[in-house]
Image (cartoon, rainbow, N blue to C red; front, side, top):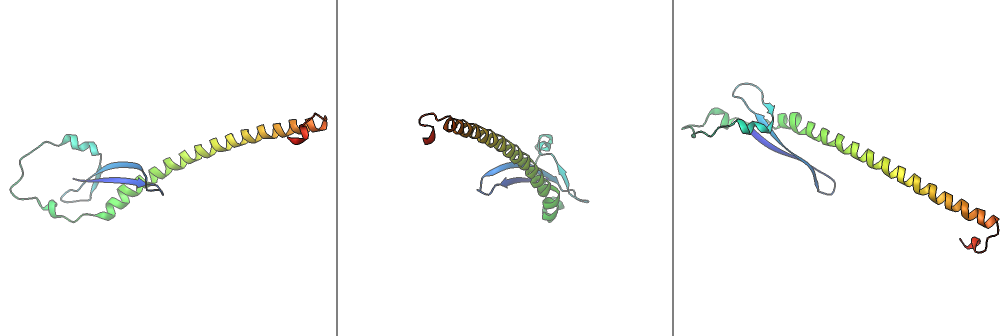
Length: 123
């Protein structure tokens, strides 16, 4: 079992998402992504006299990159895009409301100028 910690960092260097990944590397066959909760299934045991051959097996960084880290990045990207969309919608709604209030104020000031209200021209 290999464990990896993935982090997504924004342009300011702030960690915006972090996750633990577990990859099972069998003696024969391809690596398999597991849930990190698999740690709860482990039972302490005495160390073996000799290490199994899997202990010296080469890691597969391409598997981890393609099957673990890229999907994690895409998932985080989708979450951020949805969040940015909500923020943009809120800002547009707020800006529209503010512009409407200013428009109404300009309309009232213009009407007061037309009605020759004292001091209206200064507004």
